[in-house]
Amino acid sequence: MMGVYPPAIKVTGGTTVYLAGVTAAPVYHSHPHVPEEFADMPDDMEGQARAVLDNLKKGLDAVGATFDDIVVADRFLTDMEQQDDLNKVWAEYFGDAKPATTTVQIVRLATDPRCLLEVNATAVID
Image: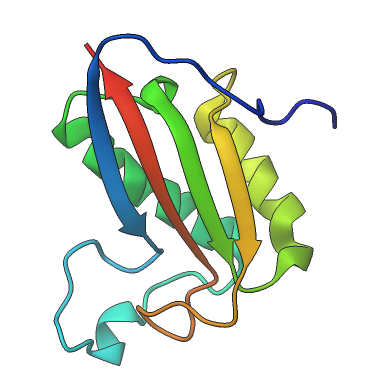
């Protein structure tokens, strides 16, 4: 697939919104972490990608933004071999919107060892 993201986006005007990293875990959970709170997370990339993007949407909704408003997103995966599964779900949520995107494989996410993906993003609204 060609052109899944642009290498650069120019933004003029608007309000910048920084969306903290979200995983498939509930957005609001205990600190220190309680593993039982994450028991309902999907265990596959496709399921976790949907949960992550649903959690990201909650942040977007809170500020009156949509996926179309995201200009940059960072994606942290524990297994790069699952990137195609992520990209499939990503395309469903973003449609024609294509933020500048960085994807990095990491050893583990801080929330829970069962988390496969974390996404943070920057949106511009107004």
